[in-house]
Image (cartoon, rainbow, N blue to C red; front, side, top):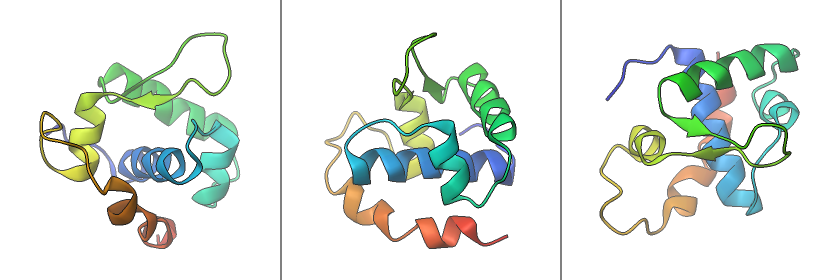
Length: 102
C-alpha cells in the first residue's frame, strides 16, 4: 500500500463512506463537511494528490464523478478487490466518526 498522510487517508476514507452510504459520488464540500474541514480548496488539493497516487479519479469538468480506483478501495478495505466487494457499506458506515477525530 502507498504511504498516505493521515489527512489524505481521512479524505480517501470519507469519500468511500459517503459514496457507499449515499449511493453516489460526494462533492469536495461534502467531504470537507464530513471531516470538519473548512476549506474546500484543501479538500480539492488532497483529492488531486490522491488522483496522482492512483487512488481516485473523476471526469474533468463534470460534477459527482469522483470514484475510488481499485488501488483506492484496496487502501480503504485493506485487501484486494479482485475478491467480491461485499458488505463494504457495513464496515465503513461506522467509521465517519473515527475519521473526524483529530
